[in-house]
Amino acid sequence: MIISNYLQIMGRLPWILLFLFYLNGCRTNPPNDVNQETVFVKIFVTTNVDSALIYLNNQSTGKYTPDTLEVKTGLNTLKLEKNGYNLIEQSINIQMGGQTLFSFQMVPAGLKKTVLMENFSNVSCSPCVLTNSIIKNLLTKYGSEKLVVIKFPTNFPSPFDIFYTANKSDANSRMALYNIQTAPTVILDGILWSVPSDSNSIISRIETRLAETPKFTLSINDTISNATLLVKVTVQNFDTAGIIFEDLVLHTVVIEKEILFDVPPGSNGETVFHNVMRKMLPSNSGSPVSQLLPGSSEVFEFQTPLASAWQPEQLKTVTFIQNKKTKEIIQSTISK
Image 1 (cartoon, rainbow, N blue to C red):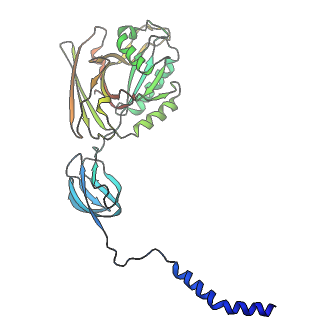
Image 2: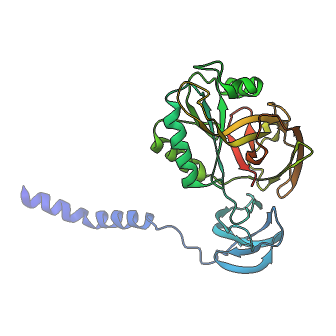
């Protein structure tokens, strides 16, 4: 029986080998088309500023934006370089029939985000003393180029806060915007609420916002003439990506950097107050920001008579762009 089975298998062996050879012939590696040619596609590269040198796959093309390139299909690297602007480097995937227009926004070198801190406080708020001390130290740490502070007075715990009664309308407007219920309350760039007694919490949120790339620059020139504060604000846009201008408003706020009292005006014992809001210009509704092309700017001019309680030498102007819907503050600055 064993011999018989063996002979049957040996008799079938040629057919088995032929079948295996056939299966092996069906298997193949990905085809290598020796006649396949590299396909090139024409693309157009443009930037918000002209004359940026274009690099393709780390090689200078000798061309400057806006211009057309012939690029092979597949993954490529585009790099744009221009003096005075941050370098742009981005991978692009070129496909037949795919995207052929590539538009980039170049940001001036050194353009930095300035964070706005809104501190809601009251002269009779005991916990505000610690928060005010923390904020003073943070201003020393970061400087006005990175951090700007506005103290908005509240009507609690005392409705007789001397700063609140001096300008209830503007104070109420900002409290209503955020639905402020307690003092102190610290908000960074309109969207990040911090534990007011925890410096690490505040620092963490400041650092988060400083990492943002701003889409605008703001500059302020303020002068006093004939007992009138004259303010000129220039808004310049560098990137419109994701921006809905109808949602933006420019707020301009007159603050007093330092106010001293011989006797505490409230019950928390403080006699020194910093960055106190005095007036919002032209009102607490702010000013709409026009549709701006990248690189273009808009100028706003305001004026207000000096109140008798204000110290002219302590006055500064803060301006910031805020999204009315999301409340995010995109950029801010303070007068020098």
